[in-house]
Amino acid sequence: MQNPLPERQADRTVLLLAATLAGLSMLGPFSIDTYMPSFPEIGQTFDVTPQQMQLTLSAYLGTFSVMTLFHGAISDSFGRRSVILVNLAVFVAGSIGCALAQDFGQLLFFRALQGLAGGAGMVVGRAMIRDTFAGHEAQRMMSMVTMIFGVAPAIAPVIGGWLQAGFGWRSVFVFLTLFSAALLAGCYRRLPETLPRSARQSFAPRALTANYLKVFGSLRFGLLSTAIAFNFAGFFLYISSAPAIIYRLLHLNENQFGWLFIPATSGVIVGAFLSGRLAGKLTPRRTLRVAYAIMFAAAALSLGYHLWFPPALPWTVLPVMMYTIGMSLAMPNLTLFVLDLFPRNRGLAASLQGFQQSLFAALIAGAVSPFVAGSGLSLAATSAVLLAAGAACAFIYSRLPRPHEQRNP
Image 1 (cartoon, rainbow, N blue to C red):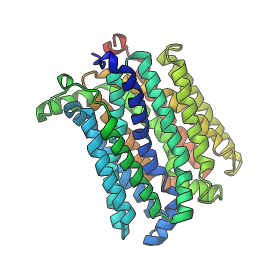
Image 2: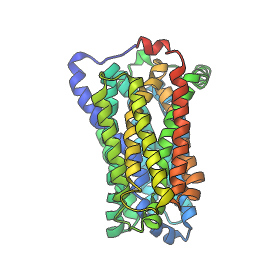
Image 3: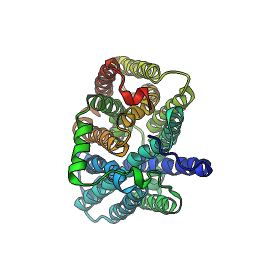
Image 4: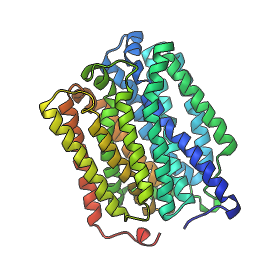
């Protein structure tokens, strides 16, 4: 059942919710991408290798993925607003710690603390959208937030490069502190609660365990969540490999990360825009077929180029842009399919889907990227394999009978 807010509050809530969720959605990309231009200086400061520097990404993503298991379930029980506020406060503390870290161990610890809190806005925000909107309006709102989310990875490394060049690596974490503190203040003043007390779930261990098992045991959920995770992993491989791509493959400097991130995230924005425009014009399943066709064309182009030529601009980054168009065109519908499987446990469903996506990203950053980032062909082939795995999951899901909740939302 939908729980729409009173009509007199609707217009104001839409604007506030869109602006707030957009800001929260930018926190994750800023946490990952802003400090990448600082990898060499951080490594020199703490006398660690580039492979060890990857641990700063894995430490963040590891705790990020674990906590996404719980953010949504907690918000199902205690409300969306309080979960976001508490986690923003923790993120501010972690960012301050990173800025003041005196050794590599401290930096890893505070990156992990950032990760504990960094995913709450993304997970709970998806549930808030579905709390408030239905049908095509939910798809349009999800697409709009995805569009704004797409801006963050484009500007984050550019901001990071400017800060690195002008003030050194610690200034990047000062920036993250100020950004998250501003979000905390804005959410405290403006963020509405979208889950009424009457719709909240019990936090008793037995009830909570039963809900987790219900979602974990759903074949449809597993297929959809895995499809989203693999689709994103095919893109995130390039994000986590950005220092190697920029410095080693393309021979650029810390101020030129935009050559990779701007095309990639422009694709995210274009795909999300198309998703919003196509809402109500194409069926969700037909939209997904178009999205996968675009992603496979991108993978074929990247493989074909790197089989014969060395990495170079613009040919190394154009397929990434194409891929992200297809990925973000597919993402809103796949996400809404997940949330609609469990109308009374949307936060929990968003948590588990976010957990799997983040876990896959952490594995890509820590266990895959270090071994394939040195070759354009290896990156293209690995991304294609990840895409094929995601498409297989989506195809199997498409062959299943439609669940009752999606026939009658």
